[in-house]
Every structure is written in C-alpha cells, then in structure tokens.
Length: 326
Ligand code: TYM
Image (tube, rainbow, N blue to C red; front, top):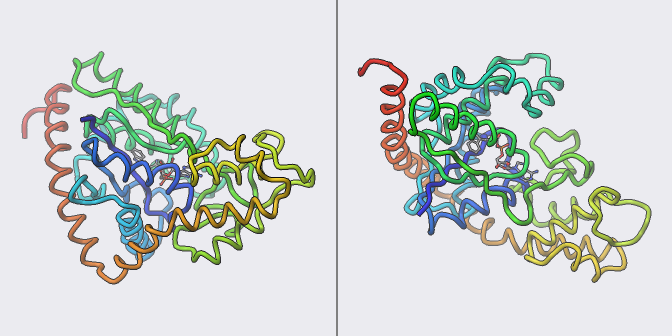
C-alpha cells in the first residue's frame, strides 16, 4: 500500500480540468492506497480572497471532492489550515529551497505578471506545497500536468533535506492521468482550462448543468480546416475535444478522430460523453447539497487522522534539524 497526498485550492468553482486531472484519480486510488487529500485553504490566501467568499469556496470544494467519490471512511480528507504542522513545516521548507529555485517557477512568473499586488506568499507557495507532501511521507502525488514543476521542487527539497540531516523524508513522485492531464480552455485552446480564464465560456464548471456544458462544448473554438485530426500543435481546439472524448471513453484520441468527418457530430458526442461521465458526480452533489453537516463531519474526522501523521513527521524533522523538544 502506497501513501498518497494531493491538494486542491478553494479558489472559485472547481472545473472539468480539476476533475479529469486530479479528482477522478483521487477517487480511484483510495481503495488500493492510503490516501490523504487536502483542501489547501492556506494556499488560497495568496489571492487575498474576500473572507466570505473563501468560506463559501472552501465548503463548496469539499462538497465537490466528496461528490467526485472521495469517501472520508476510506481516505483522509482535511483542510490544510486545520493541521498547524503545515505552516511550521512550510517555514522549514522555505529555508530549505533557494530563492533561485523559487524564481524559476513558471506559475509564479505567469501569476506575478498578471496582478498588481504580488504577495510574498505567491513566491514561497511551492515551499508550502512541498511541506504538504513531505509531512505525509507521500510516495505518489496525483496531479494534473501544470503541477509537474512544483513536484520536482518537492522532490529536490526532500533529497536535499535527507542529504543534510539523514534519510527521513520520502521522495515523492507525480502521478498524471493517461488522459485529461492537461485540459485546455474551450475558447482559447492554447491555454489550460483555469479558474481565472478571461471568458467563462471557455471553462466547464463542475456545477454547470448538462445544458450549459453542452452549450459550451458546442461553442468551443476549432479551426477552419474542417478536418477532424489529432494534432495538438496545429489543431489545438479539435485536439482538445478529442482529448476530452478520450478521457471520457478511454479510447485513444487518434482512433477517435478517424470516426468523424465534421466538427458538429464530434462536439455533440463530446458533450454527451462528458454529461454521462459526470452523471454520478451530479447525483451525489445534489444529495450532499441537502446535507451540509456531512461535509463538516468529514472534515472533522479528517483533521484528526491527518494531524496524527503530520505531527509525527514534524517531531522527527524538528529533532533532526536541531530544534529543542517542546
Ligand atoms: P489547483 O487547485 O490549481 O488544481 C487542483 C488539481 O487540478 C489539476 N488541474 C488540472 N488538470 C488538468 N487540466 C487542467 N486544466 C487543470 N487545472 C488544474 C491540478 O494539476 C491539480 O492537481 N498547487 C496546487 C494545490 C496543492 C497541491 C499540494 C497539490 C497544494 N499543495 C500538494 C498536490 C500536492 C494547485 O494550485 O492546484
């Protein structure tokens, strides 16, 4: 049995990229592995969210994660800020990674350019992410493609820690899904689908109705060639649609392309397949919306289980680096 850790930010509404890149894997792994899933509310602070919006987003994301099939009796689902070891280990990691390493993070560079107030937290964010992972001695981290570089940093941080202080931390590995690791924006298919997209039409929110989803897929940007072919560089829009169909059906995008002569029928099948894929998710979500106490109970249980593991690692880390016992 391996140890798994992953996280999702409570920033805005979760989207199809989060589902295909991460949440679907989270649910699939929980029977074979010992899984810890964090809703990383401390990470969300880098966006300086409105307090009420943060509270609402945190509850909604917890509900979405549960609706995606994550079962609090078979894994550990918790809020990052409920386990104080994360902040303490975050500081240890900040002192263990270099300014140069953090400066090379492409997500930092992209996000810093796009905003006026660039918090120090935006810069040190990957160190806190490394702390999240290393506290649980995770072997594998199920994430989408955009987290690859952050995972490399977490690995480097673990290797460096172990060479300085002895072999204490597990060196983690990223696990990407076969299909859906990089879902692109439907209106701008050269950018990844994200919560901060310019046009909401390009992002499929997991809370969208089946009709809304179908409308967004129908309006997805393609090209004027009129030929269905899988070629992400030359035909990013059509290839994204084929990737989505592949993620929903399990078939290779190249093989799927052979079945279509026109974009219209492809889009219709993509919408239908995605709505079918999301059917159980939507059913569970509707049930959970009627019982908010299930979310509170799941997080309370998760907090205890997570703290027991994180605190034990932190005590060993404190001792190894020379902090006196409390
Ligand atoms: P976040 O909240 O941006 O995204 C959560 C998960 O969704 C994946 N994802 C995507 N996958 C495919 N296509 C997309 N368009 C897409 N957009 C997002 C992400 O790769 C991620 O797996 N830094 C992390 C949160 C985090 C974390 C961690 C993750 C904090 N600590 C420890 C793993 C381990 C983030 O902002 O994810």
